[in-house]
Image 1 (cartoon, helix red, strand yellow):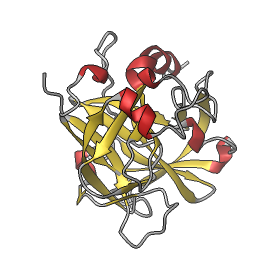
Image 2 (spheres, one colour):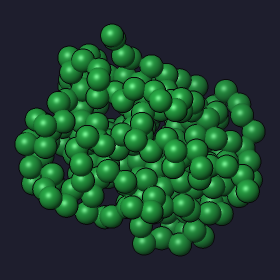
Image 3 (cartoon, rainbow, N blue to C red):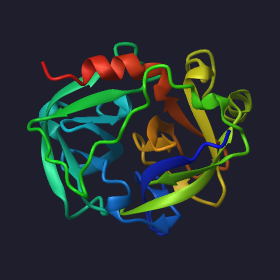
Length: 242
C-alpha cells in the first residue's frame, strides 16, 4: 500500500551556519499548506519546530523545552517565516512525557498548552492525529517517497523511509543501549542534499500526524523521528482540557 509521507519543518537558506535550527534545501511552501506548523521560541530565540494538535495544545520534542521555565516559552503560528508575521502566543503549561530521558529518542515528547484556545483560520489549524489502532508506518514500503517541511522560510523536502535496523547501524554512535528501542522510532533518508536541525518538526503520513523529529543534521545519515503511533494514548490523555 502506498503511503503519502510529509515531513514538515522550517527550512533555512544555504548560508546559515551549522547549529541553526533549520533545514537547508527544499521548495518554499505557504503556511496554508501546513497551518498546523509552528515555531517554538525560548527566551526570545527560535528553539525548535512543532505542531498544533488541538486548538490549545502544541507538540514538540521534550529536548526543546528541557532547562526552560514555562515563562520562557512562546509559540509562533500562522506564518511561513520563523522570525516574523503570524501570531505569538504564550505557554501556560508544559507536559513532558514521563519516560523522557535526554539520552533516548523514543519518549522525546512534550505537550505545551497555550494560555488561550486558538481560533482556527486558514493559517492556524490543528493537525489530525491517527485513530487508535492505526497501523505503524513501519509497515510502509521502504522505497516509498516522503516529504518534509521545515526555518527562515517554510519548505518541503522529499525523503524516503529507512529500515530501522539499518538506521541503528548507520547511526550507531547514537543508537546504543541508552538510545531507546528503534521500533518506536521512524528513520528517513533525504533525496536531495539538505540540513535538518529543526527538532520537534512533524512528519505526516496520509494526512495524519505520525512523527516528531528527534535527530537531524547535515550528514547523509538517516534522520530519526519519534513514532507517534506508539504514543497515541499519552497524547489523547494529556491534551484534554481539565
